Image 1 (cartoon, one colour):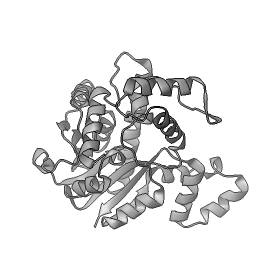
Image 2: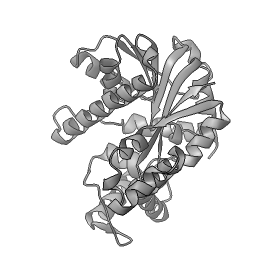
Image 3: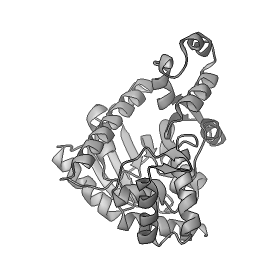
Image 4: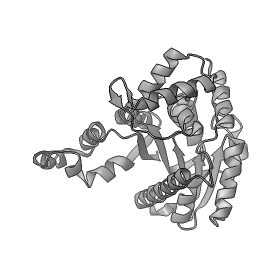
Length: 301
C-alpha cells in the first residue's frame, strides 16, 4: 500500500471502530477509562517535574481519541490550555462530551490528521508541550508525522511520544501474524474479528497463554487488527529523537520501574543494576519489564 492508501485505511478503521470506545454504561470501559485518566494525571505530573514552566502554557495532544487521557493533563497541570487533535469525528464527539461531563473548560478538540499539510492552519500553535499517545506508530509516514509535530513546537519546548514497545507487543504481534495468514484482506473485519475471538477463546496461541479477556470489537481491532503498526525498541526511539534534534530527557516507564528494581530482579542483582549508567539501566528494565508502551520525553533543540 502507498502512504495515502494506508492513511485512508487507518481513517476508515477508526470511523467504524472509534478507539477508545465510549461505552458510558459498560462497567469494563468505565474502569478502563478511569485508569486512562489516572495515567494522564501521572504523565502530566512527570512532565511538569521535568519542566515546571509548562504550567500556564499551551499543550497539543495529537491523536486524543475520546479525550480521557488529555482531560487528566488538563486537570493536573495548572492553568494549561489543551488542544486535542483527533482524526475520527465519532471520537471527537465523545471527547467533547467527556470534557463537558468532567467539568473541564481549559480544553478544546479539533478534527484533523497529523499528516495533513495544512494542519497548522487548524491549530493555534506554536505549543509549549506536544504529546502523542499510541499514534505515531500507526502513521503511514511516522518520520513525517513527527517532523510535522515539531514544526508546531516552540524552541526548547517539550515533546512526549508514546510508541508501541517491541518486547511488550510480542503477544499481539503473534496474533496479527496468525490472522494475516488466515485472512490477508485487512478490510474483512467481520471474518478477522471472528478469527481473533476463536484464537482468544482457546486461551493459548502457539503455546502461550493470552493475557487479554477483552471482547470489545474496537479493542480487538486496535490491538490485533490494525492496518498499520510499527513497534520500537527503546534504542530505536532514542535514535529517532536524536535524529530529529530532540534531546531525550526521561523515559516514563523506566523511571517508574527504577523505584522497584527488586520486583524485576533477584535481590542479589539489584545493586549491580543500580551501578549501571541511566541508559543501560533503562535497557535492562526494558528487557525485564517488556513494556507495552514506551513514553519518552525530550526537548526540542
